[in-house]
Length: 343
Image (cartoon, rainbow, N blue to C red; front, side):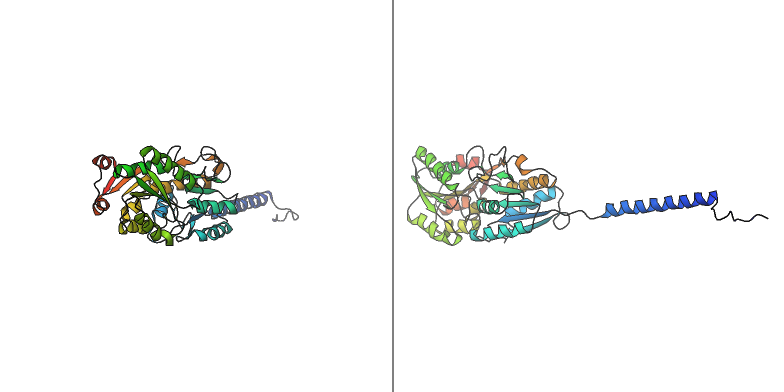
């Protein structure tokens, strides 16, 4: 009678069964390994965002950037993390905040204004920086708009080859045909303001105007400066889009109204708060566009290869309510050119 014993050697069919089991086991292990790799969480990108302005009131600077992120499919707290830092109106805090952000080792840094960009430029030459500022070439942040070089790119608030200070002086003259003296409020600690002052003086000389400079460095100097403008008898004032005015636009507008000073500025919120005219790029659009650069960099683009974009959409806003309070009649031709008239 035959038994199943073959001298200790496994039967052929047993060998086939063992091989099949081993194959299935290895296949299952491989599938589990692939599945585990597929489920491994991806790194959530981190963005550092810095501005010298204030955090209160959902500022346009934040709202525009957040809208841009949404348009590119980013949801804060889910597939992207944004670390916000505000100077709260104090430029002297910006350097420390910039160093703090760099220590977090973000994938991209976003900076609004000359002071934050300059502060980041001193603490990192490797982390990509997306700026929004007036004249990044004149400030020395990039080599050129077309080929920025280095680790910085972004949005320039210049329109064309020149800034808009001269154009705003022209608009103020249009609103005040009898004006002979125009003040210029600026921050002398910002190097590019030298160019703005020169531009204002060139246009003023063509229009038969005299420019009177009024330097302002800090928010607590605003009222004294605007009071000086009123006391010195200038017919109106052009206000540069730089800190501290960018940090205190509503307060600036209220002070202009209080001291009865006609003013033109790039900043719409100054006109809304009591200024006479605003003319310049749309701030919401500019900060929204910064999100485009963030998206490109997160997907592998190098800042040096991303040309700096210039603002293209300009808005003219006239505050008729302020004009009436000042006893002014705005020429009909200027009202026809306005994108918006605040009643």
